[in-house]
Image (cartoon, rainbow, N blue to C red; front, side, top):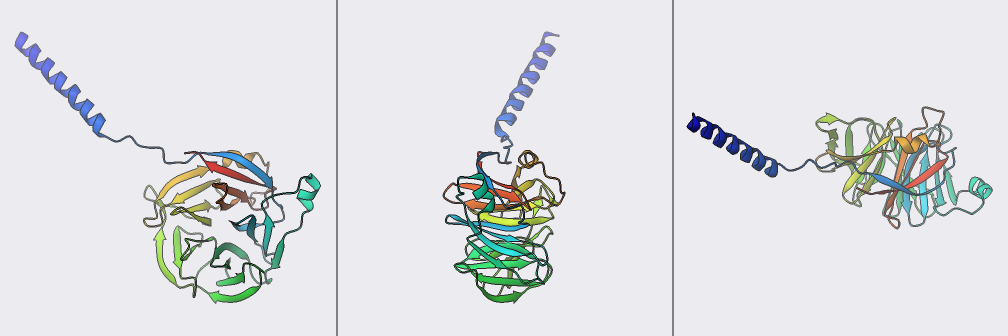
Length: 269
């Protein structure tokens, strides 16, 4: 009887030791969803139906959509002091887009601004310094978001696919499919490339996803639902859309279609 008890005690002790070893060998699952803090905000003209947004130096470059209303604009990050001046301040530069085009994503590469059009299968190229039109390039499919990794242009088309393009002739050099834990992530919209990762707004969602450009895997998400609620927006089409990396501040400017504000957010984890 005593021998049987000893055997049971030994087996129990061995089981506990094994479980402890397994626990120590199993890596903890990290929370890869980044958190953020708002470190600044500024006004944003609610007339702008934001499609593409980027920062270069001390200025924003923004494309605004809608037929017969599409624009390409430039304005300073710094604002005047008075509330009236903030609202009434003119753009530094403004270029109207021909009425047959619905302006979409915007990217900067080698001194040129590349502007997608929604369903017109046309990429419009402008000189960054003057906003003068230079040329058009045809492509297949829709244009939604656009960014650059410093060598190529990267386009979204509202699906779960991202297309890498040669900037010279806009030929596709590769595609990736974006997935989150094995599930396709569609409705990818405005894009930004920062430190080796693609950040994408998801249309009609209050989140931005962080994408590995090699695998297409979503490796993080930013939920901006609480930030959007502070604006008390009335129109369902006033969606989050606009993310621009500010190198000086080491933070992202974010806004949305016809939002009255822009927010500078810093990733804290």
